[in-house]
Length: 298
Picture 1 (cartoon, rainbow, N blue to C red):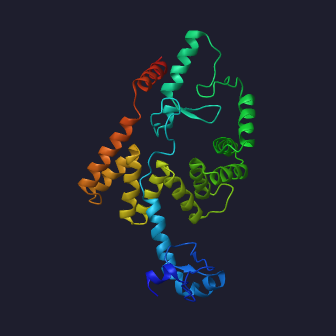
Picture 2: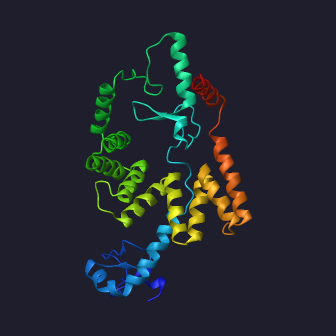
Picture 3: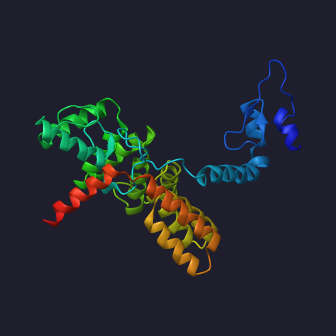
């Protein structure tokens, strides 16, 4: 049965999709359709290999698509892309991540007007103690905030309570939190609170990479390179470099010297990397960086 037939007929019994009969697609690929579960089960042995191959192709189409932005997105105040360098941004009490430029500007405004210290985004007073901060985070968790769950997972992980970390990160990942997927991959890699499972580690790294996490993308590149699948490794590293990853650029340069990366691909990655970095810059952010740099030098 050819591709045209399977799009309008059951791949097992051949019945056509007519009034009263609705065909359903195979859950893993877009190659065939079935009229019922029994037909799908009967056809499984014939379709298995083609299905597996096509499912892998579809997964790769998603996996190697350049994300529109990094998992951090834009600062919700100045609306400029956030740097993937987390030292250049701050997570606030309301789980919003803002750039240091906006955070510093708010600090200066409060100092000049002698205002109570508050969140630049939600304007709520900043928690004055660790206990108050923990209590506020638990309230956000109760409201199903995946960012707060991810943060609580990290708190539990640092205490050595890997089971609790697993619980919070799993829930956050189910709610679409990209960082949680990256953290779960780390649990399976280091065997903390879970049994070692390479497939689950790779799955969570891929989900994080698809969501725009350059560190997860970079790790996938290293793993592919370790397995001598250099073409896939280079694809991952180029995508991470396009998001502003300095380490990925370093590895691409090494691969260029080894003859694995072409000059054209390297030049394109370098230009995209610089554009991503430049997009995160602003006078306000540079002023904040200068201010914090001067404080460290004292």
